[in-house]
Image 1 (cartoon, protein in one colour):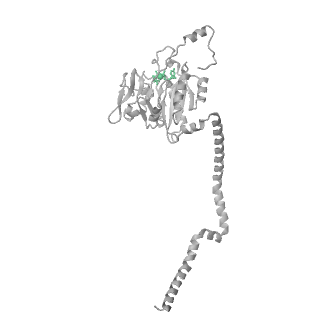
Image 2: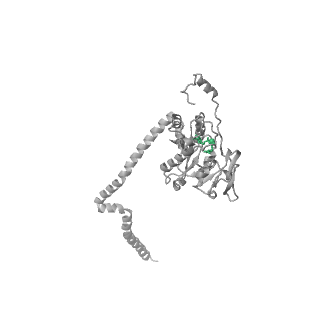
Image 3: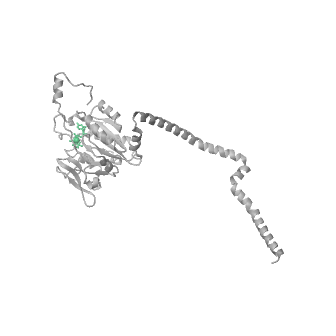
Length: 353
Ligand code: UGA
Ligand code: MN
């Protein structure tokens, strides 16, 4: 190839590259600086554009400022709280968990010598349970100072209610303990309170009837936490037996009841042996305990309105573990106290026992 020919080919290449660059460069520039070009073409639009952004941003900015204020307030509060109770903040954060249902424990309670001791025992247990809300209902015409003050310093989330048992159903001091049903209207009031005050659309929850004299393991609350309708388990020291329990079949369903006394009752178990999903209260707005129910049929009077045997959910390893005990506190002997009162030397009434 001659030198001239080679020079011609080179020139051809240079021309092609030049032509390609000549047409492509403006396209690349337009793509890369498109926004600026637009602004350049119409500088007025930029202002409009800024205004529009500012308009969108201003409510957001206000919310942000508001949130900042709340954050500061929370900080101040938690510092103040920490000063008084060094572990309070960690404790509160640890017992609240938005992702698990709340346990609403309903406890009827009545004035007697051991009442405060019972409430202390319960509180010491309940303080360890996450997402726990205590509904304490006094069997009384009014909310007593003892219970009011007790709850205020308990550290628990609570609701304090009261309703007196109708006179004809109220137990007398020396009646045998089984003569009349106990805690019935108190539980019914708590059920109505839940229906009226807890929005089930935004709150998932489980309802448990926790009498003030029983003994509860912490595990029990985790067994009941995810109840779809009604969950059941054994109860220790009850019905004159070491324990009573639901009889669970091979298919994992409840078939009947291991109980000495009338096992043919629809739900032959103690109040402490079951929990229900909060949403059943809305589904069955009239479901309640029947104060006129025959002895031993109180639990059945309520549960027959909510579920069938087949729907029960056995817990505590298919009802093979005892996690709650139907303990009963001995009535204290008060003979000497009475004698002192008779002598005109009562103990100091300012001391709360
Ligand atoms: C057994 C069951 O465990 C109770 O759940 C059930 O209410 C009772 O039988 C019944 O058949 O009515 P028991 O241990 O004999 O219970 O009863 P208590 O523990 O004396 O009373 C149950 C709850 O009602 C307790 O929380 C208690 O403080 C409360 N109560 C008792 C009252 O509110 N008012 C009373 O006059 C007596
Ligand atoms: Mn009891």
